[in-house]
Each structure stands twice: as structure tokens, then as C-alpha cells.
Amino acid sequence: MSEPAPFTISPASWSADRAAIESIRRAVFVVEQCVPEEEEWDAADPGCRHVLALTPKRDAVGTGRLEATGKIGRVAVLPQYRGSGVGTAIVSHLVNLASGLGLTQVHLHAQTAALGFYERLGFRVDGPEFDEVGIPHRRMSLGIEQRNEQQAGRHRHPQHPFDAR
Image: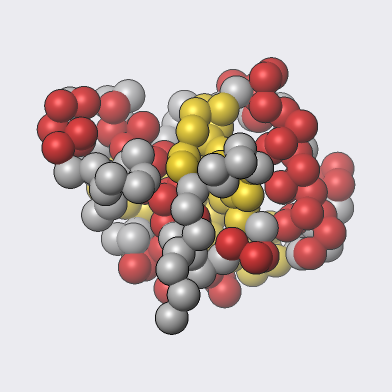
């Protein structure tokens, strides 16, 4: 088994990092999954908190966002980085961000093919299957405990700036 690719999760903003965020989401959702371009971009992006997974050379290889409502979405990882912990790190970082904002629960719309991934992260299905952009999805949620930065910092993995749980 090979070593996981090194990466970090960094806060991003729609205004400053839009090109990198769009590049990843276009590659994954629009090109690979055939989501119509007009369905991928929405009015929520400017108000969301975004993150980017970056290689040591600062290449963006994954992204995700957190809406003020506690909805995690648009989690996307370039194919060559899947299975290396990038997706887990993105979701964990967004959950920790939500906790730091005082939210006690997060939710997401998971593609049914990704249910196992989110279940391994502690999410539970809490709704029937539905169609979103032509792809079957299920609503999933996760209750989160409140932590302050000092508590979260004690448990961080040295390679990834998130609380891996």
C-alpha cells in the first residue's frame, strides 16, 4: 500500500479562490458526473465558507463548502486523489468549522453511491432517496459536540489541520 499523498486543508473564499473551486467542481461534477453547468453554480456560493485541499506545491485537489444553515455540500476530490484521505479531511474540517460557529448539527445531500463514505464519518441517513441534478441522493445528518479551539487543537493529526474523528 502506498503512502497517502500529502495535503493540507485551507480556508478559501469564493471571491479570492473562485477559480480553484470552480476548476475542481467543474472537473468532478460537470465533466465526470455530467451535472449541467447551470445546475452546479448557485447563489449560495458567495455566502458559504469554502475549503481547499492543497498539495505541498499548492495545487488544489479537493474542495467543499459549509452553508450558514449547517449544510455541507459540493464536496469534490479530483480522481487521482480519491482514497488518500482528502475527502475525509475536507468533511472533517467543515464539521469542525460548523462546531466552532456554534452549530450542533450538520447535514448534507449525499449521492447514494457515497453513503458508505459519509456513514464511516458518523453521518446517518435521515430521509428518503430523492433526485438532485439527475443523481439519486439521500439526506444525511450528524450531531456535533461544541468544542473550543484549544480542545480541537489537542487532537489534530500532525499532517492535516483538522480533528480526525
